[in-house]
Length: 454
Image 1 (cartoon, helix red, strand yellow):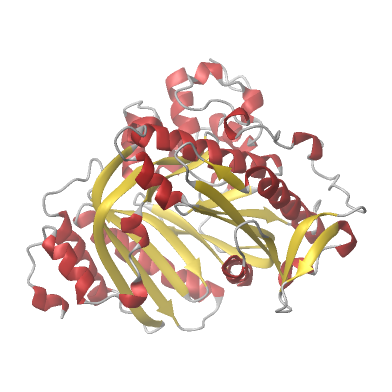
Image 2 (image 1 turned 120 degrees about the horizontal axis):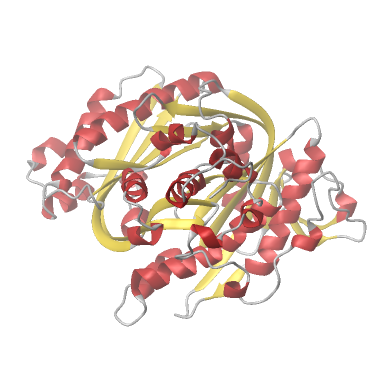
């Protein structure tokens, strides 16, 4: 078959490329070989969904449809919101289980007023159409949305032929996390850093009382859409019909049935499919996804509920510049990946908030199953405390637990990630890490002496 620009590629290759590209943001696709720190004026939107853990537990009960039904519901719900973001020209940067972070960048054509305006409009549509959703097992999913703005700093970490990842840091990241913390289900909450770019007459609002955040209730009589984006965003709003009617079917759809018009929602996908450099995106893929792609397996094959051991690593640094902070997280990431690969683990998530960097490492996933995975997880934690030696690191906290989790690819066919969701992930509280967490893991199969963790 031919690509959009007439280049020939097999259906097999087109499927592989589209799958790999869907796992990374536009910022990586367009600048996958740029390892410098990139600074942008941005609007950030953080969406947090409540009810996912209960949903996972309900669907894994006998007679409830199992992991496949859970994947269908998750992808329909999250996919609808991702599609709305793509329709508003946003870039979905990161997924984190039941939450995800998106970015809009100021350009020569788009002012900060334009990008903040667009992020708020997108948030209001998401809240209106998907703010509350009753699933068929009686679990209610709810959404809260936080928005910030300002100078953000993006960088690739890791690199070479080894595993690569990326982080975004800066005041807008801290602001959006604080706004998310202050919000409740049903809210669209903006930080002061975003609200300074808004014409208050265009929206109906409610002050939060802290002088730093503003709750946006809806559009006002003076609202105007951002005309600088291609097409009419207002006419692209998702219909107010049930969730499953809002999305195209993206379960086992063959590539030949997906036309380029559908992919035009995310031009970066078409750009990669017309390129020769798309294999350079492979280092950003996690092992289960890469193996599925290489074996020409659909992403649905990765859906499962399995028992894993989860390690949550939290590193607190001194107050440093963004460049120094990114250098610290780059060094820490390389160290984490090195130890993880030796012990058959997988770095699933990397996040940055304020002076905290957080790593989620999982042992026991498909293709990485090991009879000593509990022991390996504890060895990983023990070795990291010895190897992470940086004068700018103030504290290292490590939580270890085990349990049954949902594992699979979540999101939209154009933007998705492999994720692990469940109580075992949520209960790793690094602020209360004691010998108890380690002893529980030992009880589940580790053969290490308890004295190591006293």
